[in-house]
Length: 250
Image (cartoon, rainbow, N blue to C red):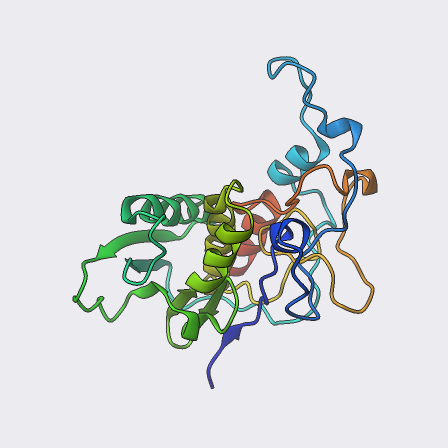
């Protein structure tokens, strides 16, 4: 049986800036809203206090690890993984060094889980090592989403068509941030995190289950403070989930 991570990516920038309809019942889009006082940029960087979102990213409080129950987490069989990035088919505005750096940044952040994670580049025309998880650009593999993890096939497919649409509708938006986020999210599934987080800020989260239920925030007034509330890299709770699942004492 193939195991696909059904994330149904709909980043906030798509719905809010591209004015596109929803692509699934599981919403990744935060509700629109005006920036809260916490999001004000009037204070200097040296004196500004951390925002609620910043605190949520670096701190996981007791009881905050909750999921939507849409999957079953399971430990992986090895403590060492290797991702092989193939640049063929990537949008022209993404250079290979740029994307490779994003892949390595996500891998490095996830390594705090205690796993050994390596990243290699696959030259055009070469076959990746059999033990590697291949990261490639494919609209077929991503199935109309920004990215899709196929755990069984050991592939992480990124959808060039949606990134092209993102650039067409809002060329000023930093699409590398969206790419960083989907890489971090989909990589998490290969570490056994199959269920999606119910904490809005977690990179493994989605915002709404399509049934009127929203994810959790420490301060509801944080809605609308930033375009994309979810972190582009794994948060403290993401890492804690991974450690609990794959730690030496499991």
